[in-house]
Length: 165
Image (cartoon, rainbow, N blue to C red; front, side):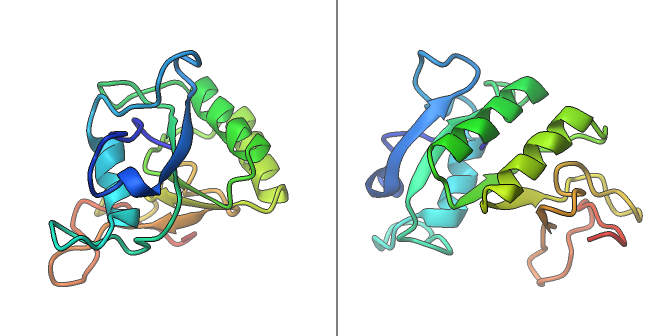
């Protein structure tokens, strides 16, 4: 769940199996920002001897567009995207997005996804280096929080961190 995925990207095309645009449900989930495509590449770029290889190059991708061209969005669209993932039997949801605010309706949606047996992974955030800077949804106990790393495999200076993750 992000800004969508470039549906014609050669390193991702074979792995894209569908998607949904929560912002404009009758429109394509194509990426108009680049962030979603970047994250999808880290996850599932194929091994074609061009560019990078994703950590799971055979993973099936579903472009769930919940963020706009400027990379921002509404929690209502994110919640709608989570609902789509439940309805369409996703196994893993990646959310490279976050908010510093605890919102009960968002947490309720995350709990519903968790209870459906879907694994959720979310970016811890870019509010580091201070302690207790992990953002939601990564801060929820139902979600696996992931921090950014540097070239020397340490937590990146800007990455969020905290005792609860």
